[in-house]
Figure (spheres, rainbow, N blue to C red):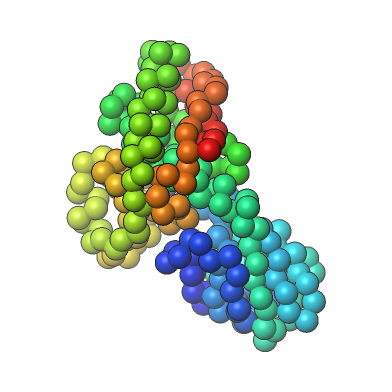
Length: 232
Ligand SMILES: [Zn+2]
């Protein structure tokens, strides 16, 4: 991986100077603020301005972070990166709130989370729960909003792999999906949630507002799909 991922340290960077170090099906940069799709959070879009203006349509991460642009820049070109901040900020608010929803759904309602996907205007969570009903949805929504209103600070810390994996409830995904490094990036939301995570988050739950659970779908016997939006 040749690209320094600056959004991991600061999710609020909207612009950055960078250099194109390679061009394949897209541009590889020395550093970036564009989030590459993973962990349920879609990639950023935006523009890259160098000798020309390049529209960044999608960013993917495999061995390298590839910025799929239209048209393609040249190797060695100096570019100014600008992310679509309005879209990214919505995704940050959704991402932090999905951690709070998942954590409370697991800890207080006994739901088992099996998947999630974030979009700018809503999120969905797949979970396993036999007799889910509207009353439970309302209680969950009320509990989440109560926690969000406490203005809980969101911090990004480094923790030893064994330490975070040993913590009750911290792991919400298959450990094989986590990076193999000894130290993991952990996102901590006040006293409500803590888990290894590579996404971009707001600094305080006060930036989110409230969530609204607006739909629950049945996806098989015990499997449900819950949709929620956030409003300020
Ligand atoms: Zn996450």
